[in-house]
Amino acid sequence: MAKTVLIVDDLVFVRRTLSDIFTQAHYQVIGEAANGADAIQQYVKLRPDIVTMDVVMPEMSGIEATRKICMMDKDAKIIIISAMGQENLVMEAINVGAKDYILKPFSRDDVIKTADKAVRGDSFAPARGSPREKTT
Image (cartoon, rainbow, N blue to C red; front, side, top):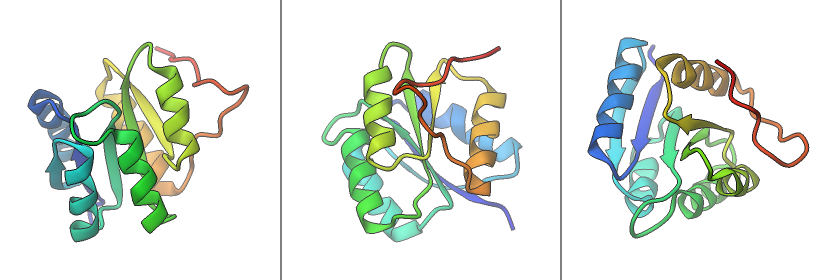
């Protein structure tokens, strides 16, 4: 059975791009949300295997939504999506329960490798208090 994904980002283009990537990799996109408040509602309703969560969104940030989801479900697998230069926000999200992160601009391989890792139960363990360096 395909693993399920909830995609959370305020930009429609990013949601569509992620949806295409996941669908091509045989994940099932079961929901989308444009802000943190909607993400929480969708998470409770859908219980996806993985959530991709943008950091900066209107109404409620991805960090706050991650915190609230992880308080409800300590096993939630949330992957933060963040722009370069927001390392402090990424670390805050990891500290409140996100399992890993992907930096924008991302590639298909970045997304799928990180999602596969989350599905296996592997998570990012911060070393030295800063996000890992991006490799190409």
